[in-house]
Amino acid sequence: MFEGSGVFVYVLLALAIIFIIRAVKVVPQGYVYTVERFGRYTHSLTPGLGIIVPFIDGIGSKMNMMETVLDVPSQEIITRDNAMVMVDGVVFYQVLDAAKASYEVNQLTIAILNLTMTNVRTVMGGMDLDELLSQRDQINARLLSVVDEATHPWGVKVTRIEIKDIAPPRDIVDSMARQMKAEREKRASILEAEGRRQAAILAAEGQKQAAILEAEGRREAAYRDAEAREREAEAEAKATTVVSDAIANGNVQAINYFVAGKYVEALKEIASAPNQRVILMPLEASSVIGALGGIGELAREAFGGSDGGRPAPRGGSVPRAGGE
Image (tube, rainbow, N blue to C red; front, top):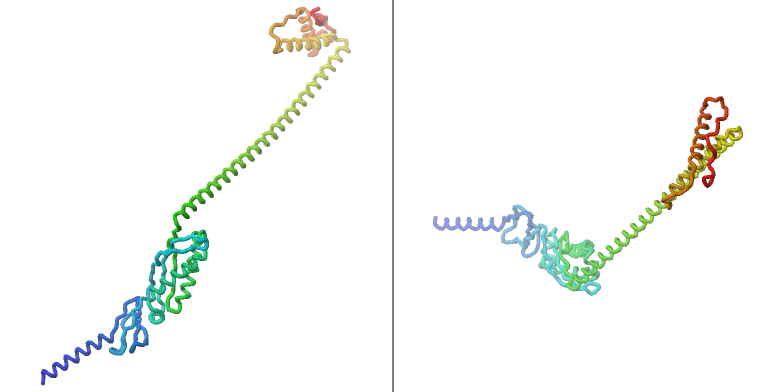
């Protein structure tokens, strides 16, 4: 009797342990478990300790609620201008509703992958090759909008879609390289021509300023020369007036001074002529000395010499042309 009761107790303990194991569920962080009763969804278990009815309720699916990265394999795409390129990318998505992700779509990952690849062909196939290479941000935004809207009934949020690589054929790459080289050479030629144009403009401006300054210098020099000639003429006129007044007053030494000065100036010009090396002229030394003596007498009279203004005796005769 005691042996039968002991076996019954052991059976009860075993059933209790099995009941607890089937009833208590521990959900890890980042996951949500769906609970099914007789195959029908009833509720979800969030991270932590959960209790279900054993033998009646069961775990339907264990859904990962963390953001997941999905690689989009390479595929060939024909662009609008009939260029064939290889394109691949990545998709970032996150499950927001575990029940919809479990029961609204079968094989969620494959569905998102095929939906993304189809829309990549649709979006990029309607663009030219140059647009594909220069407008990646716009392509990513259009793909994100289309795929996120399509996956919304599945309880999934597509956060990002990025095109990783766009690989045109080798011949197109070579053509693009030649085009880029030609464009750079064109820009270099334009810059060089612009530089020569600016240099010519600056040189012409410099020549213009130099010509203006030179003309101003010539004008200033002419003005100074004219002013000098005017003053020289005034001095000559004044000297002639003084000599004329002296002659009118009966002072013969004044005319000797005037003629002697002209005589000496003429000799100076003849001696300094560049085409003359030897000068042969008959000169009367007494005439020159007499003229110089007249100059001295005139100077003494001008500065108030003795004799009380009486005319001084002639020191010589006026030089005559030809040495006579």
